[in-house]
Length: 92
Length: 157
View: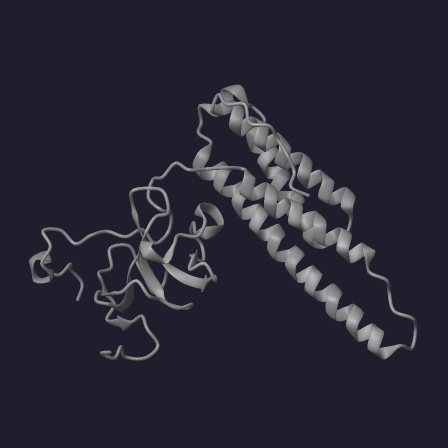
């Protein structure tokens, strides 16, 4: 997901199943044994998450995983020293 | 910070990897995604041609017509580009040199299919859309035959 994520970048995530549209999330692939990092396009009323990747594969190809597949929300790109969220995360 | 930070700092033996682009060397391909986008293109063309042009002088009707047709055109453009992208992914990532033995015209089929996507952007014509659908069907057949599987071609619309 250039330029915000480059191959090999180390990213900090907030372990959290709950995410919102616009978040970058780390999620289990809906049916393959692999982990993804994609944008959340939207979450439907059945808590299925439409994942989006500008030039890569996304929910258009592999469908919408349930929210329980979300591992966490990416907050900071350690390698590029760049925030991945709009505001600083607050502790709830 | 140019190099990877030590994994132990984060409590891992190795930092887990997440796929941002393609979900790994998944090998999951299906020409259906190109077909769906191509069908959407044809559908938008039909919708554009079915709109009734406004009566001369009726500004409200004119505004509504242009608004609607612009939105249809915008979706047609997006879907034609998506169809092109899906077709090109099959061409670049799925099909291999060995497939050229069984399908010597493979490159030409994909070239023409990609051109048909562009034609669909430029024109509002179900004939042009049908040409794209024909290419998509041809690619569907090549694809599943290359996998040794019989998958009946169908259209959703």
